[in-house]
Image (cartoon, rainbow, N blue to C red; front, top):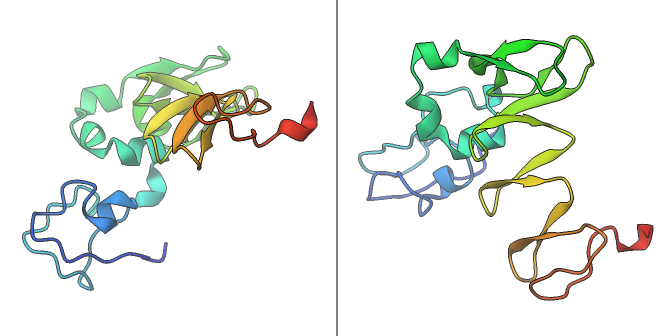
Length: 157
């Protein structure tokens, strides 16, 4: 993954004021940050879902026992260790993809749930993020319930 952002933080890179952290990137030697504590430093970003990256402190606080804990997939085909659900996992029985949602504290089915990077919350597949009012709203064919902007799939009804 090619790095797109750099920062010059003086406050440790521990919140979304840091452009690297805000954009789910670790800091590197091109950054001019001071006393960097970006929690994404030193991890392989490819091994994590967006939900896990946006909840990286919770991920890092998991014990080995918690990482090894088995979670039954909603399809019922198999049980999978939490560490294998930090990124998408394809069920061997039905080929459905699942991942662990830290927002919902449960296994999420990829084609039914998504993680809004802007709102930093897991959402139902029927919701969408409105760029006009910067909020998630229900009904992909319906107008935004906050500002009235037309939904992204309004022409499919």
